[in-house]
Image 1 (cartoon, rainbow, N blue to C red):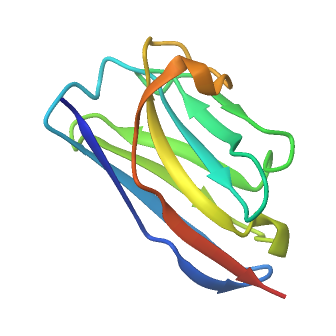
Image 2: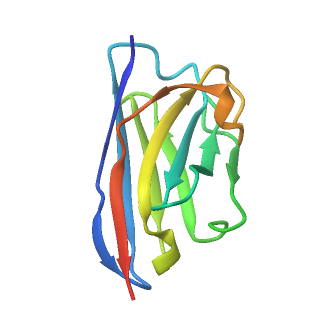
Length: 124
């Protein structure tokens, strides 16, 4: 069974940048789409970005489009999220997830493996 472990979270000032990583171990990574989600305090978990199994297509939430970049390195079994121009409203627990298929999807129900999350806090 594949396991996902996020890293790279922390405290950053508004306008700054942060990079997240998600390392996969114990199972298949390169044949599935991957995604990032986030959950702010008191709010439901929401979609952030997704990438197809080969990395050729990406999908973003409108709230992060143009600021965040999702990428993957299948040789390293690792997913990335580069976050630029961070805003206080980006503060959340960020999760990576593996989809059940190869297509990038915004639907949380189509992801069946989740990491534990890494906290990103953006100060104003």
